[in-house]
Image 1: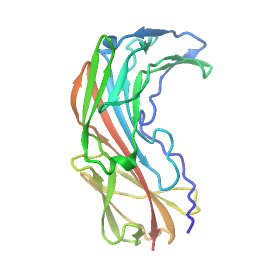
Image 2 (image 1 turned 135 degrees about the vertical axis):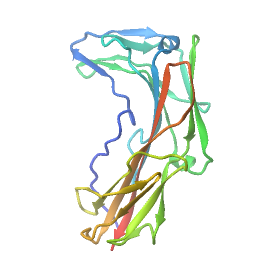
Image 3 (image 1 turned 180 degrees about the vertical axis):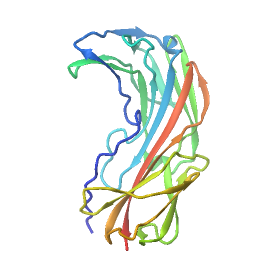
Image 4 (image 1 turned 90 degrees about the horizontal axis):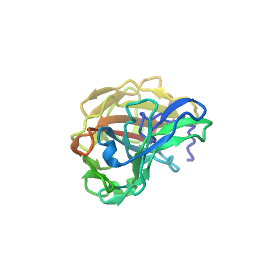
Amino acid sequence: MNLIFRRNLLRLPAGAFVAVGLLSGCGSSLTSETVSLAELAGRTLTLAQSDVDVYEGVGEAGSHRVTVTFSPAAEEDRCTELNEGATATFNGQPMTLDRGGVDGTAGRDVCVPTRAYYDFDPNVWVQQPTENARIVLQDGSHTITLVLKDGKAKRLFSFQGPGAEDRLTRGQEYSFRWLPEGEIPGPITATLLREGGSATATIPTAQEEAVVSFTLLQTTPVAAHLLTLSGTAPGEVLECTGVATCEATLFHSEERVVNVQ
């Protein structure tokens, strides 16, 4: 059976895919100020992991990505750009480094923050043991280190039953557990999109720590549906050196086809 689903665009938490810069007024009022890593030592470094699994096809760019972003300068009219020669690594693997600075290609000045990102292969990570993630940024002046507990791990929603995970019965309660264990995400959401439909329906959920449960409504049409589960967990920073503070969030969304009966 060829299943056709017309998805709405998935809205991710801010910073999940890209870090949005600051906008000035129209014109070219901003100029980039080149700085070293040492001059960013007073900033906050925020890690955002996106782990978005689609049922079929190729996910959007950045759907499986770890990004670290520096907070902007305290002064609204100041835009900094990291000097050349800096490097960033994720567990020893090179990250793509965006130095930041003023971008005027959109017809107005945008102050793009300094960031680095690493795209991971979910099919590889799911086969590998969980590890802490160690991100290191350095240049000739300074070294910044952020270590995230279980930062190199594939996030999953594990079906807890009852019955078969691809066949759901109206009026029955079902549960899924967020993995890896030990993480407790914020409110987990669940939606259904009927095959051939264009509007998603939000399913009322209940959550106890990392387990989300819902009862399939009696009014749910008998058909194939795309079930989407999504949530964001806070990351546990084990080490943060070279900057003022570090923060981390872990976003996971997962699609699966279920037959409602």
